[in-house]
Image (cartoon, rainbow, N blue to C red; front, side, top):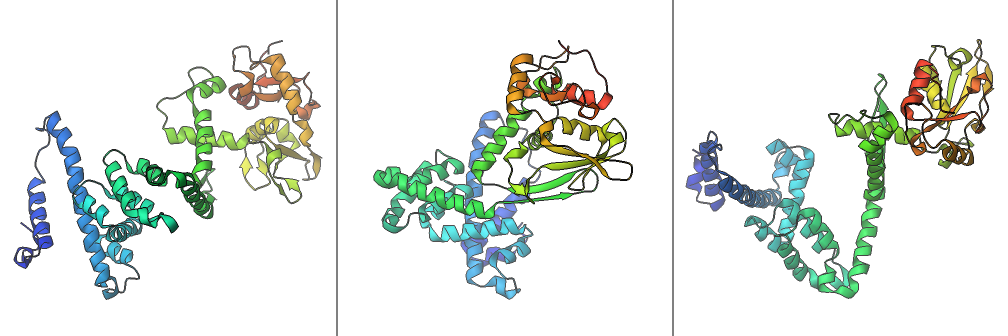
Length: 408
């Protein structure tokens, strides 16, 4: 039974449909699906998707009419989306999406009819409306043909593919202008993306930083590719040893650790200057800590580090160690020349070829450069005393202080 018995007496087609739908859905609440065989299940899934698209089109039509009647104003809502969010208890983002769909369908009758009949769903309708709307200037006359073409293609392509086809729509209608049109659309899209680019980070006070970012698709693709390469099983096994890749570890965790490595190993000399020097991190520690003590070190950003982590990072990353005496005076402010130059690194790669721990064969490309004689003990930055160690054995050396016999 409908929860609104007056609907059937109304006589309006929408009222009758909604009442019937409520009744039928109530009857299906406990209907079993286990008795459906494979062919029936395969048949019902796309059919239900089509029915759902039709219902969503009807919802969009009624939502649009609510705007015409100024129902938002009746409760003091500032927009149709705000009224919809309040009335239906959806999020503001979802309400805005539904309000935009109502506008799109109202402006594109052929798309509305296609969605009402279940031929396209909401995502496809949005993409088609946007692609047709992008035809401006001398191409306005192509809009009806473009709409018909994309509606036909919607039977074979998802919304993502339709967006690409929409950018290239003039290839089918006006090939001579296709490249210029696509270039203009891409430039406009990239300009919008740059304006919306943002990054926020905050510390939780428990050793973790959290953040959110919005990047243009091109830069996001570059970042994704770099992180995927670092998190790949082949790289993890090469750097941390055989059997180190955990297939059960969630992908977000793997990518998060890959991002940390990516940031740590980014060449500091490629960064812009800040306060007259390039953006190099300074780690402050006592002489005792640098020589193996337990007192915490601190970055110039205020972040505390374990002495083990500070000593490890000082071997490889673009970090300048500021060594303090007992009264806090600076005993030594390290120079970047304490790090091996690209030419020295190349020479080490040719000479050592892989991690110098006797049990490891990690290729040199994945290794860190370690001072065989510690810098604090008078070691110098040269190829004679330098040792290539994979990240695993580099961590191990600084964490335990163990010095295993290395290859000679």
